[in-house]
Image (cartoon, rainbow, N blue to C red; front, side, top):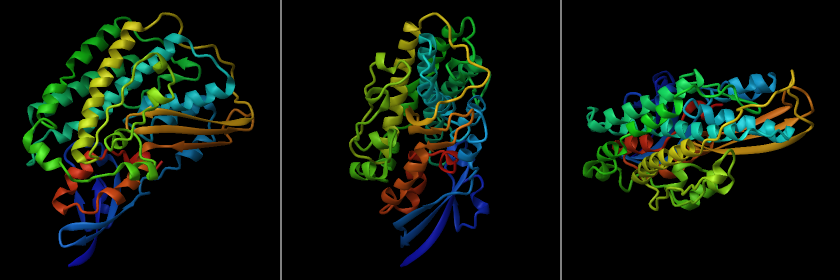
Length: 378
């Protein structure tokens, strides 16, 4: 029997006129927004899927265009609240490239370190709900993921003063240097991330592997056709990582080895996210060991003006490629500022990976496919 249903995902989904709400578990990042999926079902199997987005639209790009470049940084971290620092850096890179500004080496290394801490924070936030048992009970992995997440968030807060919207980046570097003793606190926080226990509750658990294997398969061809990036792309074998392929900040002096999968299913996506946490821990420790001294910013004029022209900059954010297209007419505000956000491109892949999925498997598939709704409805 063929029928159509519209399901909602997220805290506000019940108010969107949907047939049912999919619960992805407590504290899942996707629950902070709301999006809908129009499904065509044959009995209990999805045959067609169409993501319906736009319920959280805030016109971020137009807001950028009525603020000067320093003010715009305050908006850059709000569309993907789990990649706040990375988004700040992407915008700052665009202005610095247009103005020919040289960022001090210490600021470049600190940016790379904070980006990797930000990546760990995001991945742990997505993994934490997946560590729970099918009936929602906490496990040792849940505790480990939450403890690691809070430890990383604490050192981010110590360095920036912000818990979610960090606002540490400035055009030309960082707002200020990190406090005394901060690097030792970071080293301690990295030791708190117990990935082994997290893996025991997820990708190394036989029951978890049985539930997640072979569902929600996204092929490498679909990844390339749809512009999917980040762990979702690498889980399908697409070997793209801007930290290696087009390095910014201090990534050119670091060895980045993308964590790749081959099957493109839900299990592969979770495995890639877990593997990237381990790599971020390694990269963060290397940044600590090689952190130079010196200033962290440059003296700016009273009004920062980008020369007439345009530039595109991009960065490997936690969920994929975060890009900024900046067009200027030589004024202190952008003439056009276009965002390329990972979740906006990645959400289209649900139309390719959901057909063939049983309704009972939808929470597992959607939970493995990391999205931040504000990043979709920018």
